[in-house]
Image 1: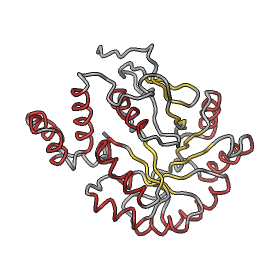
Image 2 (image 1 turned 90 degrees about the vertical axis):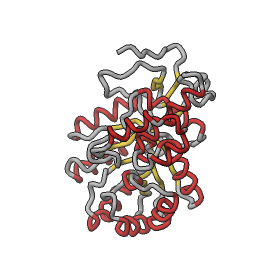
Image 3 (image 1 turned 120 degrees about the vertical axis):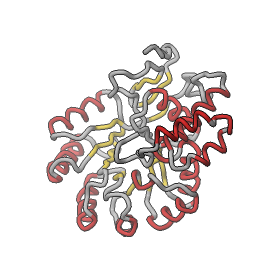
Image 4 (image 1 turned 90 degrees about the horizontal axis):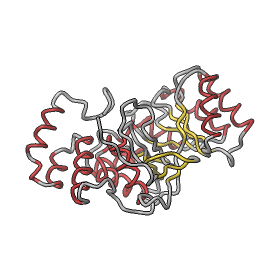
Length: 299
């Protein structure tokens, strides 16, 4: 999915994809086991097999969501940039009815980011707007705790991946001392077996984990993470990862069946200029399956 981020960003990806097509007759369980190091192919297979079992329909997980009777609360994503640009995005999201926003931080001066938090809280308290921040590993371990303390002054919900992934001991110490709940994101990528997953969670003891099916092994891999998180009293939510509407459709339908009460990190593929038209729309901070809008697979 992403250069330098996805664990299956490898030179043999296309060869493995071709092998998968040639051996589709092996069945889903065998293929998922064989493709443990290729989570995006695993996810594609799960979608394909579900679609076949539903006579090639897009309704992979029938529910009140797919029938247009219910919706999924989502956070509004604020992209990195200068303070003026970010503040305008925030105003647009609030006008659109979002009650939870997620800000990408770590790309501009930290004091300016704090000033942005301060200005938001001057207008909207924590009961009105929930704020999540995502550092994408931008903080250095020796400065992270102090930055988290300063961020905690603004009643934030959580911070994603404050330090770079792979620094397990540093992250464990940070999670034990933090005044602000920490959510692991990139940290989950490339952790394959249930034993490894359990070890990571029990070592770091995060407050939350974030599941991106395309990056962590599709539905099966994500379900393993969720079961382990819940057994260790760790919260979780689901996030899409710039999939097309084909992938987002599957993630959203599956996410609804999990019955989480937290806002999820699901978009609508609005960044693409060549996406596939789908019934997924955002309305007042909710992801809705609009039955009046049809799929359009014309290219």
